[in-house]
Amino acid sequence: MTSYDVYHGTGNEFAVVDADEAPEKTAFGTELCRSLDVDGTLFLGIEDGGARATMTLVQPDGSRAAMCGNGARCAAKWVSERTGHDVVTLETGAGPRRCTIEGDTVTVEMGTPSFAPADVPIAREAALVEEELDGYDVTAVNTGVPHAVVFVDDVDAVDLEGMAPPIRHHEVFPEGANVNLAAPTERGFDQRTYERGVEGETQACGTGAVAIAAVAAYLGSIPETGEVTVSPPGGDLTIGLREDGTTTLRGPTERMLTGEVSDA
Image 1 (cartoon, rainbow, N blue to C red):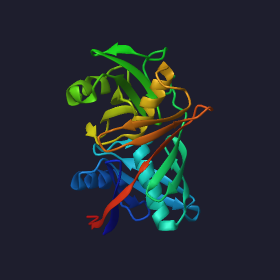
Image 2: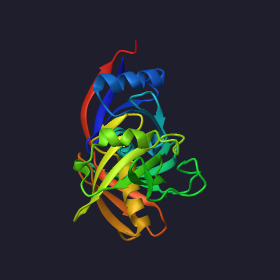
Image 3: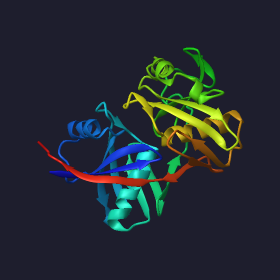
Image 4: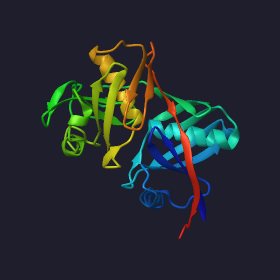
């Protein structure tokens, strides 16, 4: 038997498993996603007594994502609850991510967003900024994973499940992309995200929230530094934009349940 915990970060749900106790990750993680109806399975290997941990994310379709903002927040909370550390560095496929845990609130240092074609990646030599793809003005950015950001007047007025797949699979994105709708509000931006690997809408997407803030700052619609609130269906996330170009993601986490599953 292998034990697991289920956490959510602003409605983004993950099964969390000790990597040392888990069988082969891809098949096991995919089945756990299916049986628990979660957005991903996080395999964590604790190092340095809890000061560091490796994070591997298996998505519902069996693919692996280099980075997941809300997943990182859940992972850091899991490590903190096991070890007592209130600062944890996660080793991810997108590089190390320093996380600070303050009660149920976790802040992740998300690195520097990149619009460079090779970094996103996109199959062209120039950045993709407010250009039409399948009827929508799209900006491409990498915030640990590739994102396509589309600004609209009302996120709820758009058929996300209909409009997102052609952009998610567009030939300009050789590795695919997450598709984010964003609408300006008095507090910041509303958000809806269609996630690759999940192949559907999720209640929140941390890297997508950072992508929305980064694109808005890049386009000049918000200041280049400061904090902005991005609100997916699952709740509010706070994005920090720093003078050095790096970003942070802050929001609540919660452990929902603990269980065991047969390895057979």
